[in-house]
Image: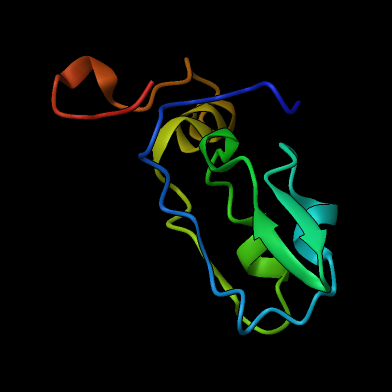
Length: 99
């Protein structure tokens, strides 16, 4: 799903490459191929493809990744599924800046 892009420059994803130990867990768990491994470190290569699910942060053994999960489109879709309702991220209220 490399080509999936949400909104440009709004993702909260951060990676501390100095802290990264190059284990590759972020690459294994990311559904949108946001990360790549080179020179024994992870690098963010498709930041705008991040859906802020939080899998990378939860699986990083050295806490090198931070993302504000539970916001944006991914949260809207997941909450819709959990509540058995239409997926919504709050865009209809005019206050939210997402999909």
